[in-house]
Length: 425
Image (tube, rainbow, N blue to C red; front, side, top):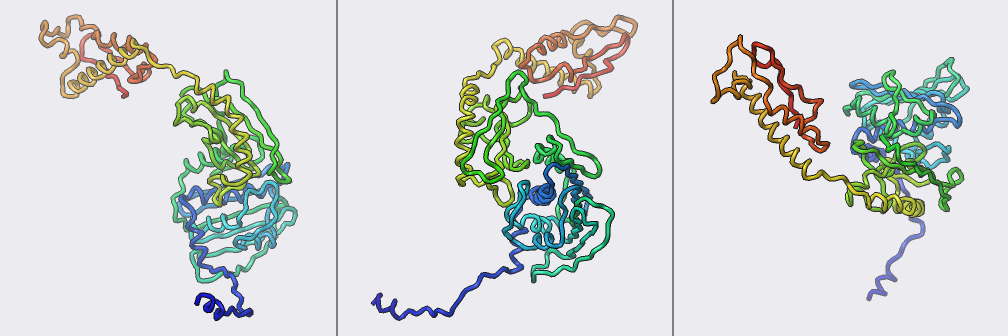
């Protein structure tokens, strides 16, 4: 019976099914971001990818409550042909060796995620012509749009691209933006290849808090699954200094852009032992494909498997050394000092409370003893408790209060204390 049903089933040869792209898919792509930072970086990635080999690129970022403007100068710029390619969602195209893009949708989706309207102005290098088009409603998903282009002459010869987004729906925070930029694009800033500015101020990086006594290990190894522009992986491994405030692991870059950090490539990390947090380094994985929003690498790719395997071997002696390192623990004497410090702090807080209520610390130490001295008599000396506190602070493991944060009570010759100590917990 089954054979009979299959014989009765006829598939006409003239039926052809065709894929289509609905404008409503843009809504889905707009929703592909978790936070404004991811969308913002897509636009900066486009600016950075426009640079020319051997020439400095300037990227200027301007932000206000309802507007975001990103300008790059000194790159290739964009011609009408390249602007058309930008508008082709998902277009697979040839890219320069510096172009971090891959999917031809991130920048356009980012504009729709961040705001309601956009305007793009561009000039290709050497042409002295500006091309501009705009969209007043990025959230119109009913149709794919046609954009008339306005042309004008310009005196500038260098390549130029300006992307302006208006009616922002996300709160772009200044401090977070600047910290993000110097963290993500650190190699480009460090090499001098790109200068970044935010609202007119140049962004600068600070040196990593490395252990200067440790000799950094530079490394490089060839790769089988590279490409015509990238045939090797390079980087360095070092150590963080004590109490650096920086998380350990390896920072992984693609074409000068941080994609992921705190990577141990299959080795034990700081969750296994805290000393592993001292391991620190950078690696340049320019050939490995990244995820759509470049929040990680494609870690099931053959490119990642190959590079990760080599990095595992490079990290091995470092991991063994750090696993064997002992974390200095406080002695019993130091623990006693910490305990003593807690008792002293509690007493100081008690003294402070009484002082607020109208009694002075002198009252505390004179109650139940001899009567208070009058104004004409010699004032009482500093309580012994403050001497004990000084002794306690000699311990490097005290951790309760530090000499810098403590202002000892001062007494004049006739009155109550004129100062009181702020106490940190």
